Image (cartoon, rainbow over all chains, first blue to last red; front, side):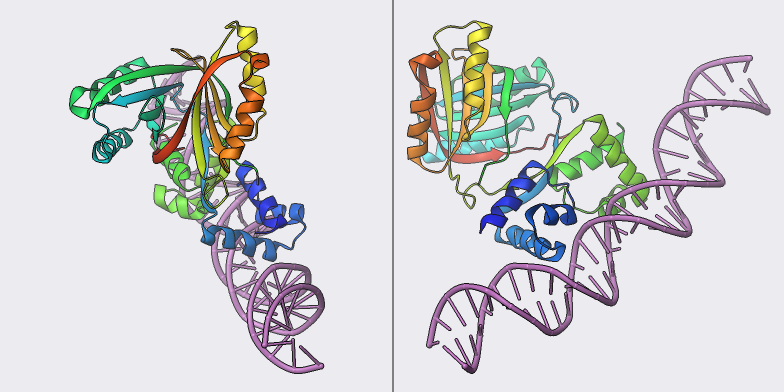
Length: 150
Length: 150
DNA sequence: AGCTTCGCGCAATTTTATTGCACATCGGTC
DNA sequence: GACCGATGTGCAATAAAATTGCGCGAAGCT
């Protein structure tokens, strides 16, 4: 993991659709050497996957919401059970168990408010061990970054 | 945007490193037709970008944290100012203005706790209009999905 | 120095992407 | 019902990229 590897990772985190030839030139390597590095970064697991990011608005998931959830029972077993239920929900994009005043934080990608309503009905009920929850609708997205600088 | 387009988007949201030939076969089109569809989806903006997702642990950003921030002054101008400051921070991966008991939610990707400490020093101070903030360290990531089903 | 390992570039080969083209389908029009 | 334009498709040719074998040189070790 030297300077060139980091350079490659930074490039690919921004735009992984560029050709290997193109990136090779940018980092100052021959295409074959560059390719072997990228393959190595893949196999090593540093590059987890390469994906297309859609525009939420154009893909019909215009509304984002964050929800903090407090559970009634806090044992590891109860936590896992709730997370397992939450993760299966299609509209739940992120689900975290966290420290602090709350137990779980979810991020949602929603088509409309009815979807939010329906989700709350399914997810935030007594049988699911939910004491209470706070919903925060995203008004503005100031930053949303999958990349991390290396 | 027909059934085949949706199929392609679903494929590419999972794995955008597959060859066009490969995907063409899966959706039942010739490579040329398939390619033209993908190009169209790109130009239309439905596909915003194609990126490499790194493994946070292997890339040295093992710690995630969520922070809710309450501002002192709530005008649009003040909100924008804080978000502009927050978004420039390298460790801030997501920054949202939200409704609810709090004004802003940030997601952080951190190397260690010192980075968190340093960020708090820079960001959550009186000059930046911050009344108070609550930090939630992510204990477990149950789900983290860039894809949305179509 | 001798040896091993590793990453590099070159060049040949295979695979893919890209483009021009003719054809089929669909809707709307006259 | 014939006509026409717009759209999407497959095929085939071409250009470009990915992939692989190979020999070389630098770095580390004995």
